[in-house]
Image 1 (tube, rainbow, N blue to C red):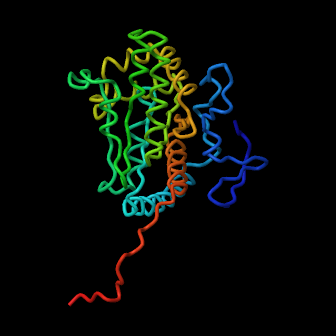
Image 2: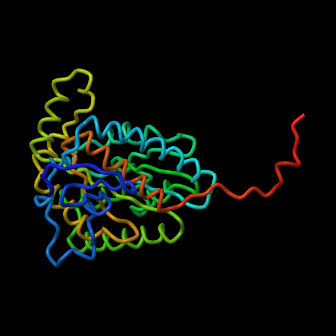
Image 3: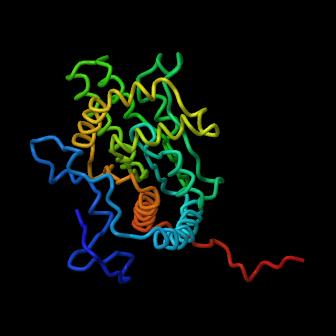
Length: 293
């Protein structure tokens, strides 16, 4: 992890550090080609890391990102040949809702929506676990943000010992195949794991309890989840190790520092949209022949 004093220079939207380069597309990527036979360990990823970026810098640069995101979203909508799926996962109080407010605020709701996946209802349980996910996948020209996702069907069963280890392995394989299918059919997938420390989660949950405006967010399950921290981290490590693929990569986002979390996610979404290269369609008529009386 970088802890050096740095100097910033602009070149193709990459942030240069003194002696090193911090490109979020690489730095926070769970690279499947570099995963060894040993499972990824989140203790090796610093949730407090902030790239030595000040809050002023992140806010200023995010304003620039927002303008570019808005322009690219418009092109994606006009192009109408591709879609973008953004998945947010993380422990309770890791900042999924805050990320949606701060990062996605620049997007036009005309072709952008958020879907939150909670405990499956009776109808959803009557189908395979990916059924409710597939019907919410964005159509061409759309951007969808999943607040939690199909990964809940691995995390919760793992923590609560509801399915066997073999079933967990099978679901990881099925999800990899499902995401590859979506990718092959025009959906770009970006998956963000919001990585906070146990102490930071405790602090945020305590703030919710003490703040009357936030008490509605507290559920008994949040407190149970905090007590089961190690089990949840183990489940996330399994998913991050098994389900980061070229067609649907995981990014581990240091989320203790909220403004840096938002900056990194904005940057990665912007870069991914640029890679998608959405274009305004070629006009099929000669505009010069049309006159509005």
